[in-house]
Image 1 (cartoon, rainbow, N blue to C red):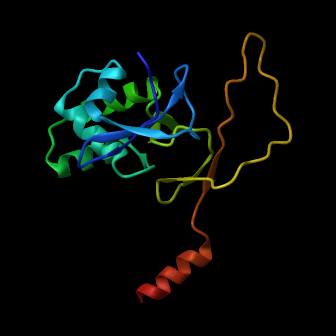
Image 2: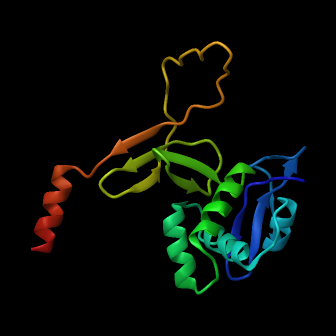
Length: 175
């Protein structure tokens, strides 16, 4: 079984995946299109109408951040079959096998990111919105992991809110 990052074209249910070397995605190499059914098969997942619909919604709009609830609303609006538990299970499974990246926000709340390469995020508290940080973040000192643990990655979540000047500008524009 091979696992790759994907982006899809919703109308044709085709997905684009990077060519891989020894099962590891290499983002700089050429891409090839494969049917969404093949993507699910290669990931070892049963092909269902719900999963096909979710593949189209997730990967057919380019790189994006979604919550399970938001994706479920999109699924319902599209008229495709599926329940909220189906969405949760699919997102969990896709993130386990590397098709999505789970970005925890607080407690059990999480976003799922279709851009799985290493990058950092802004989280707008007042908007409940996740955005990519456009540049690398320089860390001056990395703590040593506790005994018996190894460092896997460092993910930075920068919490932001609209500035007071942005709120007053919006209020003036609405008046």
